[in-house]
Amino acid sequence: MQESTLAYVDIARQADTVKTFDGRIWRVKGLVGVDDQTGKRKHLAELYYNIALIKDNKWRTIARRKKRCLPLKLWGK
Image (tube, rainbow, N blue to C red; front, side, top):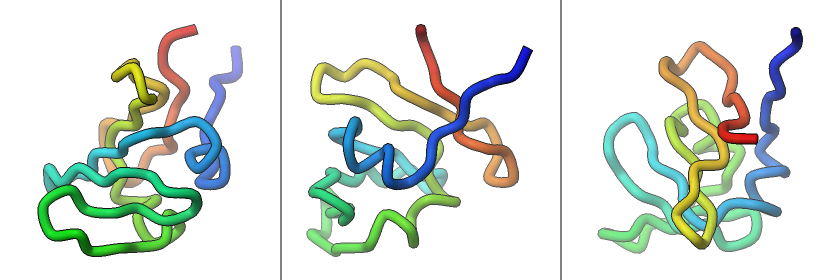
């Protein structure tokens, strides 16, 4: 059975927030992530390998990964 993974362009379409391994929460605005605390902006491609958890606008988990070296795997369905 093959598991589904998520590319960064899919994150832009489906995600509302992403949480990185350092505990920061980033709001997704198109292809850009905006840090909740500092307002710093980064392209999702820069954040991609640090993303641990992705949530939609209803706070449902879309995808997650346990380690930075693993792919983002779709969660739920």
